[in-house]
Image 1 (spheres, rainbow, N blue to C red):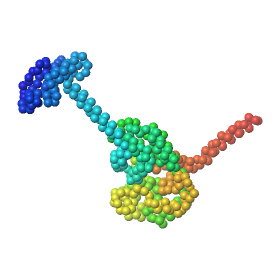
Image 2: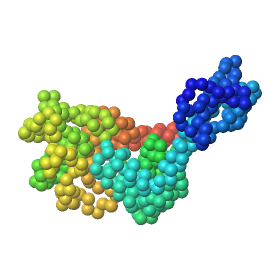
Image 3: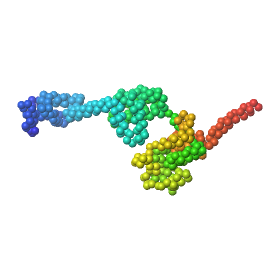
Image 4: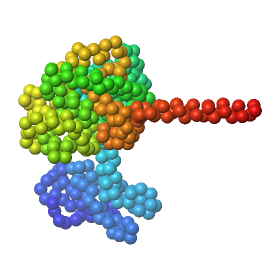
Length: 407
């Protein structure tokens, strides 16, 4: 570009000629303007004739900037205008991208975005359950709808459909939890920018607290039957019964967690994210002493089929043993049915019956709140008798007072 500035017929407007490039029959010209703003002399380039700039357009732009500088209304510099235009364009582009993202149907958000990423750290069992809930109950109602068009009423329809099918409140709770997580995921990843409709829907809170626990005689029968069925199944069961371990905690145990010297079991990566220790009973200690110890990070109960993944669930043979023993015959309420978790529930119940405080049981179980453990409080020795005695004492005093008044 040439270095010589050439004045025009408009004050403050000038240009340079391109040395070779032409626009029409003339050499292409680059326009610039000069003016005063904030008591400073400003010079700003505008652009080429080939980009649409002319002397008249440059003069009009200069007049607008001078007016803005004089009146204080509008932007008094071309650079500011360009910045404002760039910001406006960015805002427009962002709004268009947001609108395009929010126009994606719920099914695509779930299958292409949420499910592959959000479930990377979840267990295969959780992944299967979420996919099953989506396919059966969520997709028929929400699948074709963009996120921005989904309202609480649609989630109410999902609730009704599940209840009409005769399924439990727990299923409703799980299904709505999936919807809530999809919206939360979409908000975090700029696929949605609104209110989560799941927050406006009343989610049923099912009472799934198990009330059944085994008597010592039932526990003996169960352990004996399990031992005949599978030594390993017996060992996992007695660990839960004697130490209160969840199935997942048993499957996560490594040999480094077994401290025979202090009769302790270290429980890491628990359901609540807190580590704790379990104290071995004599039976548990003898069980570990009779096993061939593995290396530090080796699983105490390695995968069944020799793969590298940890076990995810208790063998189906446990249910077969329960069925053969008839523990669940005639029982329809799932809270009263015996399952593997009943062993942990029995452990806690026996502790309370043995006089261990609720606070200590809470720590043994690894509960995050005392409220979770209070379900066992009615089993405390003499607690019921003490309550009844207190009531009887009140009525006894009232009776004696009335007799005294009569005299």
